[in-house]
Image (cartoon, helix red, strand yellow):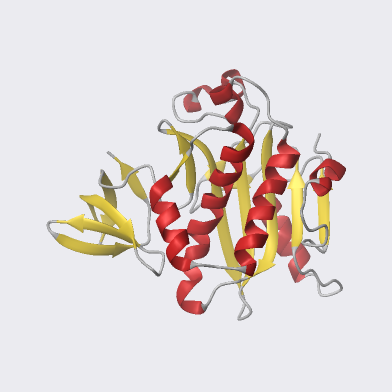
Length: 254
């Protein structure tokens, strides 16, 4: 069970969220956030929805997100965009980076980021971020799925070689509430003082595939290039046949 009081006691700013809603079980935290946002009888600014059991979690594109009840972090939060229009894509780099930093602080392990917003360890997926936006005011609905206390046998057999958890890496359980609070404390500091160059440099330092070959779809063809960096607009820069391509889609590390 998620202990909301423990989570709130670890937040630096108890008023960062206007509303924190906990549900033992729901289909999708991201879908519920949009439903609440669309409810004209209510007004939410900085809303957090957390569940212990998400039965129909969504990933990027058509992907589904598996989470074991009571052992993972599955939440979505609604905030205003805090970046300029030309920096908007940097949200997708920033959120996983701050999750990585929170994990490092509480579990003392070096996890990495796979473009654009997957969190990985030794080639296995540890978590992911889904960012959606609507309307001219650019409200952000940010979904976070993170494997915290799952054991190997908790995952479906087809994920044994693809997924892991913080507990599997460290060998001991982690309290989810302080971990999530540390992430939001980091986020609040960034909102107050955003430095694009520092964020990009930090993301590159934690990227799992700088100067590695990746497969990606470009102009309808699956091609192989060398992942070089990200630019100031949050786009991937991939070297293909000595041509630097700006890219926003999926990649596969080779």
